[in-house]
Image (cartoon, rainbow, N blue to C red; front, side):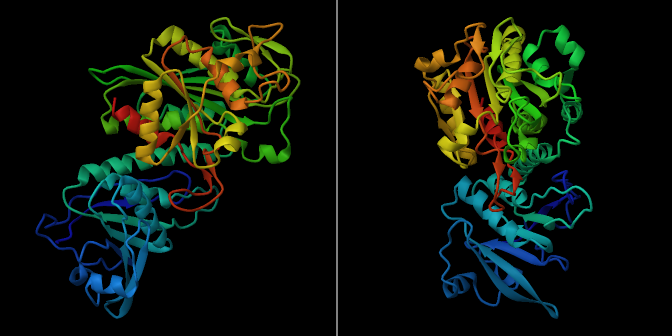
Length: 491
């Protein structure tokens, strides 16, 4: 099997994610060319099934080495073999791909890239199967974010090697870059990440952008966004991103929660609860990243992204528990807890989408409730949906991409939890007759969707990782980017 490298992906040092370049094809890099191990490549990785012993300098056939090491070929299994490299000792990684599914290849790619940490470069012979998933895994496993003195990246260069899979590699790269952008935005400290800063980053994504500032929000009667943001020195923004391909097959609106920092407002969080609140705009980051990747993936559907951005702070101008606010469209809401602010800003965006954008379907994504993490843990996101087909589509996309969703019920019997004696709705339940905080939050959002097909993704449990393993690094996960891109690509 001749080896023909064609794509080189250098990784940025910190905080800005992947910076990919495609150099001119090497001379003689066609199907009959061979590429010996580069002098500066400390690692060469090949799948168990590819017997490339002569090409990569293995001392024995791969099958004999795998038998010696009792390798099973499971996804993520890596056997490191020393080889002669001139007068030095090199390393070849033999890696397993399990059943060859997208999930297995994603895991394998991550495992190989992690074994390359600390090396200047790693050259990976691609396996058979859904190569894009392998590329995603390898690139996301090298993610780092650091502000200040730049450190060396985990792997300076990853070179993918194979024939006839350029499109799949490119797709994997686009998706990994989108996830990286979402992680970068969510990981950025809120001392930098004001609503205005987030709007500036959104406007850089190559799609049409419109931003409402605080005066325009007041004039437009976006009462939820204004109320949440009025306690902060950093005023709120509503961001609209528009992707309109020629011959669009439909119109989808994505709404993302963009709370750039959440103190809880006057319903103040404890210190431990505030430490990670810079990632409370993870849903908005996902929407920004998705809109920026649509053109590169050739998505045919029209997509509008709305990011309701505000900083939930406390001061003499902050909204108070018991205040009544008027959301976009005229519905009044009694604010019983200022720490249930995400639903207030998102209600404005959903109501605006229903009234002004005429979408075929609406999907919102938010780190909305701590309760969902208790219900589903750290590996499953929640989907609430008013439409069975939409729920099935999103759940299927989650299975395909490894960003799994569990459908949660919209229990109409719990709707009285939102009754208010002085307004149309309350933003949380009074008392504890019903309890189900994630369900009642979803029911609140449903009130602003105009009975259109709608789904709500609660990613509070999966939007942040406390571990550094697989495709995840400690901090923001970018959860939702891959599943939404898969879903939109299939429409």
